[in-house]
Image 1 (spheres, rainbow, N blue to C red):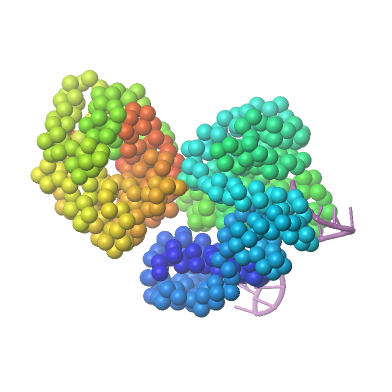
Image 2 (cartoon, rainbow, N blue to C red):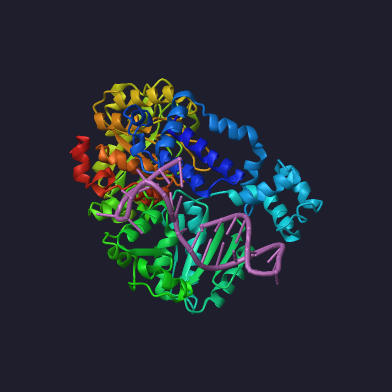
Length: 587
DNA sequence: GCCGTTTTCGGCCCGACTGTTTTCAGTCG
């Protein structure tokens, strides 16, 4: 069982223990263990073999034993036992919003309910409402939540969330009562998908702001409406919370609700080590904590009057940590040592290498793409149309490819466009790892992007060997590995691949790994870029544009590149045209 | 079950909101 699968088991054990009413801190330990496994940047097998798994934060002696057992035998007695005594339907019930472990347990024990179907019946015939602590409203809410369950639990692409969030934020900021406002949460951390939106507004007058949201024409349903906090759902299924805080607490609330949870835990621990207590309300001396309890949170005065998050970080002797990095993956330690990377920015981008034209499945001609690149002020534009095996995308035969190379060279010579055009190909990595063109064809190009487009569901060993063979394939031209896993966020699972092995091979062979900027892809995943960068792998943020507007998607890739700790110098397409041509051996 | 600059026991974030309650439990973030 690999690290990811074991993390899922630990997560499920946590839920099963919740349903049993176990010690909540024990439950959290399993959940923390699962997260620690997911964000492991070393091979689990190596950690186990070298007996270093226990050094990972959040994994203690008991979890080392359990994880090792699962890794070696795919089996764990505790897990089997818990599953045997808990009906599977109870786990599904936990997915119903507003229905947590205590209530699930209650309906199971009192009514013998073991599935969502039985729960529906119990809601309809009045048995649920008759339980102590529940009532008719609970039953009605539950029925609605069951009906809408799939939609409620859906996540949304960051770009889709942005299309709703950014105009709303503008409107919110324009309200007379609002002094400052931001979208916090995973949206602000630039996660690839977003579950809901967290708006924070600074104001001494919350009532009209609450009214603005619950009355908003795009709101489909109001799920909570309090004095300082309301929750709504939009017609797309996206949910939003809006919290209004006093202006002097805004920065603390913004930081708190930006998270992530792991980041906040680490920040609070750091504050405690300095005799301070950090919360969404402010930063308070620990020894005054009791006195502060007597005051309403909103009335408490923080030890610092933070105007910006930089002030907050400074108070804890830290460099400012950009929201993208706040995932509890070592950013605080890096900030303490002054070793946070200077992250790549929009303005650093000077071109891109993976774009299509009408020659394969693009909708714009070579000239139209060149004109758009000029308009964007790019110094170079790489064309990489599909190779012949991608027949569904009108992949090019060698003759057509070489004709395109000729056309590109002529266009460069003509001086019609400022941008320097580069002749590449998105060449298929065939099922056995061979490339879709003979070497003598590939060697006439400026570079190639190698991508998997068929047989994406191969088992990990086969897929890995296939990708590694392509990486090691000797050629005279530079190679970029395209969309490594082929995932489509929320639609298609990533191919099973050993990221670490691929990264190490790419480092050895000098192969650049692509960060495909298509908002559905964002592949390779941001979680692996820090490791890749440390191992010396370079990144190409590629829009994979199929029309002229597609070139602008490069900023979607840049967003997650920052999340992956990437510095400009790591990203090949921030280099000047002279440096790129020298790197390609074309100067 | 994890953790340790209060260190091997005793903490582990806590406030807003809802729906049921008559002072609070459960859920969520």
